[in-house]
Length: 371
Image 1: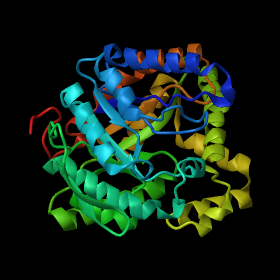
Image 2: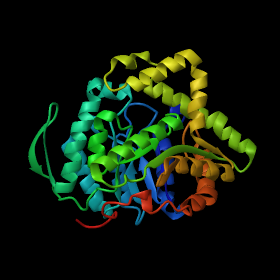
Image 3: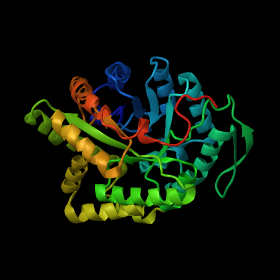
């Protein structure tokens, strides 16, 4: 099974100078290929300590120049926050620089502080995501970007250099809404499942997507990628510390950044699900929700971590998994030890698990094939 590493570049509470925190994550990125990981992924975030990752293609291009085989992915590139032409150009350039090793993960964004920082109306994000993704994904296949929509109008322009290879089979979307599900399915986009919803809800959404994909394409959908924050301890006590200290702090920081307790989501188009989450937090308490979010992730001894990751993989019939080893206020030393334990005792066993091909994608050109 394809097993990647996710680096989120957190510096919670500014515990370190940003330069020191960033350098520690860069070191893990450089160690990922010799450790045997199949890919490195980074999310896009702006303006806060939750994630110092404002330009993911730039970071991945830096990493491309220092690696030879590892794939390079976005978890995710938030489409409403940048011009679609530049997004398409950035990924084409990354693909040329890496000789076809890039993987495109896309989403529509959730952090209000980030929408405010870009002076964007959060209520338009679903419609922007739908129009931008159609223009970008079509442009990455044709080499020409154009669109005539309600919110986005783009005259036809050539993308140069031309696309290095098709992105079909190596594009994934997170949190696909019913409004954009048809578009994603029709364009052959797989799903990225980031562990923030109850697993039964994730399974329900996956079944609906697969059914719609089959209706539109007459073929099976690509297998999804699962993304989990992962803490490993050699002993039960060390594993419990991963849960009680670092995964719990990660959960708290996620609630803080995304304002999951803000009932005001009910008034924002496209974010009704999160209004329901805020009502549940008000009913059951913030501490209980943070425990729930921490418990969606993976921690334990190596045996326990492998067992739980494979359980999630089987529940969703996933084709790949991304493990985040550094989060929740970990010092660089703690993060490096967690990384080492994952690489030594977890990674080989996950990679030995057969899910039917790299990333589980059965359709589309292989990564690195020239157009």
